[in-house]
Image (cartoon, rainbow, N blue to C red):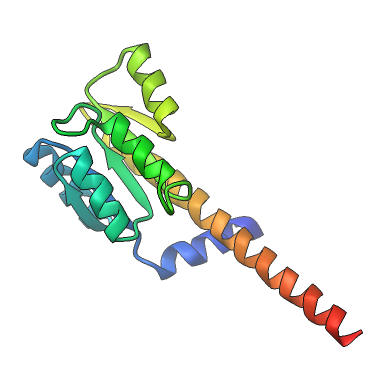
Length: 161
């Protein structure tokens, strides 16, 4: 195992990742929830994009799994609103939808999704995409923490001199 992997893995093992699942289908939400909880994740659920944005602002999450077509506020708009809000730039968003046309894919990425998975869900693919997204997030956090420590050391060294 490389040093880079060790940092990510140690952070990954120390905390239970929180995932917001957004889908207007109760059965889809429950199916995804069961899969995630079986894999050790803490799951928060929302039935539409408006509720998703509200839940995201109320509770910190590490990743959002978002359906595209939903009533009230669709997944594309919710994705954009999450990205523009506090903490939205740091959180991974994976769009999960039955739409597999090029325009829908482009729209999802333009709204801020980092991944796009079509339904029916291929569970191994979802598992890998979640892991990659979370590894990326935790690696970025580790780099930011290292940078902050380095700045503190440099600042304290300057004071000592």
